Length: 248
Image (cartoon, rainbow, N blue to C red; front, side):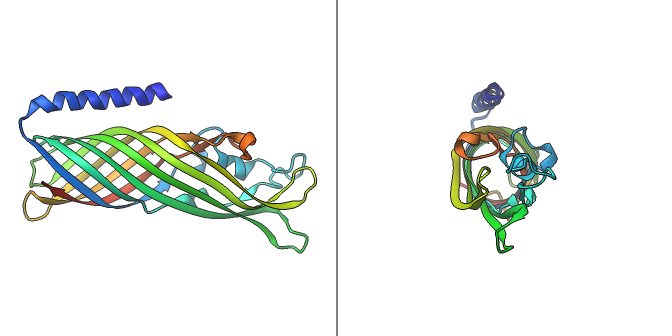
């Protein structure tokens, strides 16, 4: 998998190297804005994903029905509204390299699916995922600067992530309820596919970008040794981003 990301990065750098001598006109710009991110669906997530394991694996072995002890929550609730910024280097009208970052934070509440406290109350947890993707992308644009420009591109991402499960849990041996927090953090490397349209605002200095992206990537949680039922966390998902661009 890492070889795939390396090859994608090498391809992006190769496009940059070819673009530099292709035009004497080099234009810098910056953009900033926000977006909407949705995570990869339950049935298409990576094998060993901690969230899938939380939903499907009995936390108390040997119980029946098999769902007993698994957590109850909605993976779709890990959607987010990321904030982002990017620095662009344009070579002529049609090739652009961008380096940027974004930040997003999702909090999802969960409970044990078939277990309750002695007084009948739910046993609750908070599942939180924070990510800071640092991205390098190449865009190929149609049209001309100062006009509507549809574009497509690809790139690589280094996703700094922190995933926590905090709240009350059930001991699988004694069945006692205890409070704890489990943490996993690191950097995951992934790939990006993107496409969008750039809309000028009264000339060629200002523009609005509407862009769709899909990020492919997953990180390591440490698995059972770190208190998690799954050794991986799938960070993949799609997004629609809205940014304001300024050329200088």
